[in-house]
Length: 264
Image 1 (cartoon, one colour):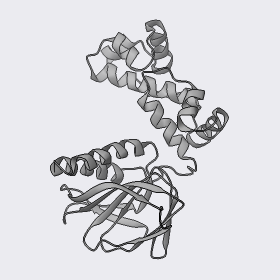
Image 2 (tube, rainbow, N blue to C red):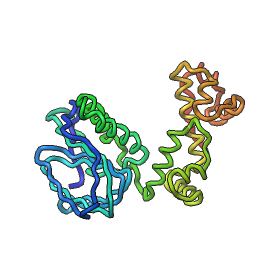
Image 3 (cartoon, rainbow, N blue to C red):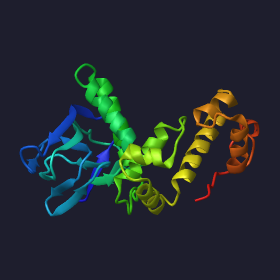
C-alpha cells in the first residue's frame, strides 16, 4: 500500500493523541488498529512497512495509515513521534494521499498543531479535533513532490529556524549552529536542495513577509521593517525597491506588486 484515501468534509473523531517513545527495549513493533486511522509525525530515522510496501522514516516525515492495516515499525535506537488515532467520517470528496510523505518545511507547523492537540485532548476534545482537522488538511494539500530529492532534514530545520526568527539578526553560521551542522555543510546542501543560497532565502522570506504585511495589515512601515528584521528604514526602502520593484509606501498604495523573483 502506497496511498490512502481521505474524506475531510467533516471533522474527524479524535480518539487518542500523544507522544510515542519507542526503540528503547525493542527495535521492532507491530501495530494494527481495527477501526482507527493512525497519523504519525516523526522525529527519527527508521522504516515503516505495510505488507510489501516499505517506507523510510526520516525527521519531518508524516504517515497516514488506514484502519485495519498491520504496520511494522523498525527503529534505530530511541525514537519519538507525535501520534493521533482517529476516525474519519464517510462521505465527502475523496483525496488520495501517499501513506508516507516528507512534510519538509511544513513539518514545523504540523508539529505545532499536533502538540496543541495532545495538550488539549484531556480537557478539551473539541479543541484537539480542530487542531487535528487543520493538520489533516495540510497533509492532504502537501505538494506531491514535497521533499523530492531531499536527503537532509537539516534543510527543513534551517527553513523553519529562519521562519521563526525573521525579526532577529540572522547569519549562516548562526543558523548552522542552531540546526547542528557546519556552516560549509549547510551552505552546500541548502543550495543543492532549494536552489537558493541561505542568504538569498532569508532575503526572499523577509521581503515576502513585508509584502504581506504592507498589503494586509495597518502596521506602520516602521513596525513592518522591524518585524522582518530590517529595522533601518533606509535599508528597508532600498530592499523593497530592489526586490519588490517599488517603495513600501507605493506597494501599500498600489495593491499587489509584481511577483518577487529573488536572485539564487
